[in-house]
Length: 212
Image 1: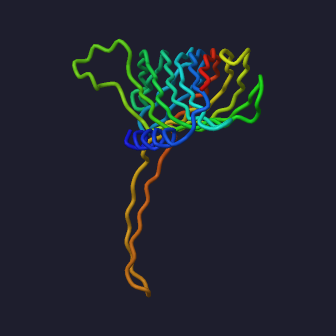
Image 2: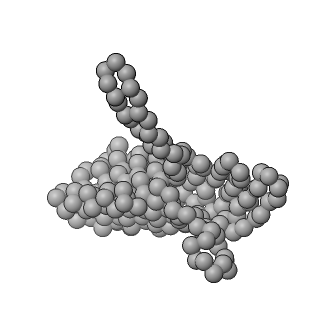
Image 3: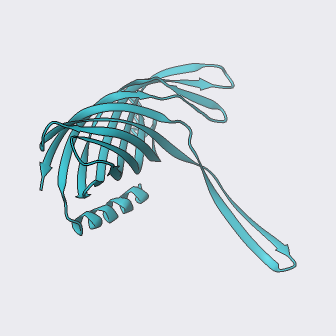
């Protein structure tokens, strides 16, 4: 979350020093294909399901945009305990909060684009009754890579078609080591991240554009 906040501050500073060409608001609907997250003692299989959300697209230069997006998926998941073999189904909510850049490659009625973003993904159990509100939920740093096409009807309305891969990340460990050699003592370390699951989203939405 600290990384996402830093990127947000830098983006706001960047847009304030740039000439805004236009602002777009897009309600989005789609379908998300997920998979299975495997761990040492258990796994979580996430079912595919419909998604909804929205985005704000700020064009700071011709064809270059800063984008804020929100995506929500209400689905089901199954937890498998490797030792006991027991499976536990539950309802799962997935929320993705991202900020990124979108680059368009044409100027006209049809504008293909690519998008790169970072942010956070929130996993939480729906309809949980546990007294501990934080039980059954987690926040993860995530990245997303996507592409799509904008189809404009006029200067104010259009449609957006896109597909993207959302990749949450988890810490896989930190290592620190020291050694002694002919050149003296030296130390080093490293931090590794893993991607436990990938969410493939395909969506479409309406573009409401406010030119400046």
